Image (cartoon, rainbow, N blue to C red; front, side):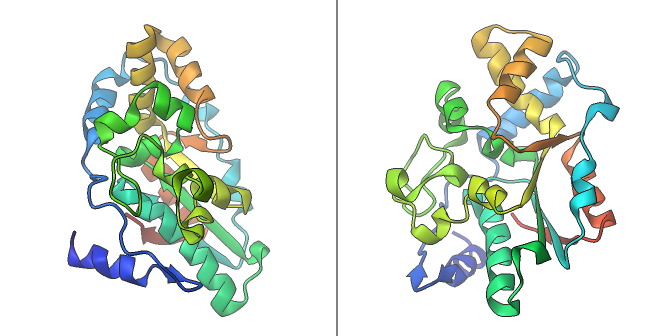
Amino acid sequence: MSTDRRQFLTHLTLGGVAISALPSTLAAASTSTAASHAAFNEFASLDQPAAQSFDTTWSKKLTAKYRAVFDVPELTGGSGVWRAGLWSNHYRDLLQAQPTDLNPVIVIRHNAIPFIMTQEFWSTYNVAKDSKVTHPTTDKKTTRNPVLMTAEQDQLPPMLANLTLNKQMERGAIVLACNIAFSSMVALVSRKDKLQGAEARAKAVSMMLPGVILQPNGIFGVTLAQHHGCAFVAAS
């Protein structure tokens, strides 16, 4: 584990809960790397929505006093997602910011794209096997989506359990996802279920975390958020 990462984990402490380690082996360039390559190879053969069909109305909601966009291109134990949650927590704790004062935008792209898929998808398409996913704090192998884990089922520390992707969305975080990287998820469905084109895409979309908004690509989402006043954060 790198010195920078250890320093981050050392400082990842709230309410007396110290997190000793996020996974050193939820490899940033793990299975998603291969999946991303497959996505580009298969992209042309999969039915893709027209550019104008992507929803950009989320950008009109970026009117809060404090705005930030968190770029999450790698798995890295979910640290990009945790950092976005910590930003909101610290602005509330230190600046007494109200929920309406905060506009966090989380962009999931590139190798991190499996994060936007439900646990059902992870289990059905064996995402963890290729990704070599480990538990955020124990480093033990897991078949669970780390950023959707719970304290009860997964023994996730309460502080992290409150920063999962779905919990942040419930509190108003905008979560965007790269459509190009998402094609690797469509490709998994296509190969396993022998579905083609629009049918494979529709099934993959149905197994996304509700509320995630696909964008033509991740960089488009990042830059559009910046154009609407969000500070940029390289989160992972």
